[in-house]
Length: 303
Image 1 (cartoon, rainbow, N blue to C red):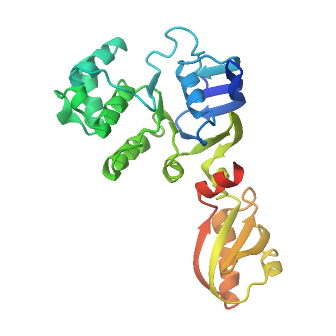
Image 2: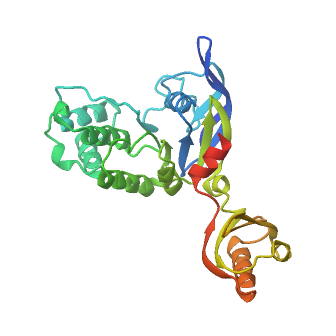
Image 3: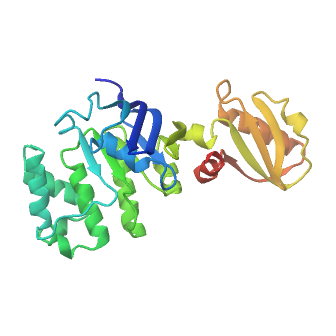
């Protein structure tokens, strides 16, 4: 099996004259938590739907877990999905509905799978609750439970924490963390702080095109730059550029020193230590050091 969970090559999706996804090439490694980022209309949901096999590409090739999702039943047992606006059918008890879905997925022990999935999302007590009686947050977690049944190797989650209270959202994030390395998880979300915390890598989409993709460290610049908050003292940037690994240094704002470095040839912690040591030796007082930028800041620069 390929070491890539998802492979898109020049994938385009049209709806009549509208191009929703435009020639996107993207690879998502197995075992990672990977983010899809972009404003409304960027093509995230369309890309998500093609990965699930809900929609077929107009052009290009797409493979999910080594198979083409356009083939009937190709993703059965390989993929679990939580659509953004998943709606549960009324008139069902939660446990009966999940058990029914587990049978449709040909899971060997449907009721056990349903109970374990409900317990995982913190809803074991909702087994006999009617779906129409669920709160928004409970319905969202029930829909997530169906995506987790059978521990599929690939799980796609579209806005998994949207509308959830902070405590439940924290529990959902922990579920995602626990899947890292065991399953591949693709998360589409507008919550960039959440994605920065959760994801190993991400793709940034804008108006249907791929603006940038990479590891989270690459996207936030953690392997290429850091900032030093200065309390007091004189900074001489040319002295800093003489330090091993430092490629550039400048005052980005009053009291904020930006240092760029070669993260390929030098370990970040070594460059930071050398720089901070030099500053302290020259009488500079430091308030703090931070690597890279916030993901939100980087995304706003790119889009």
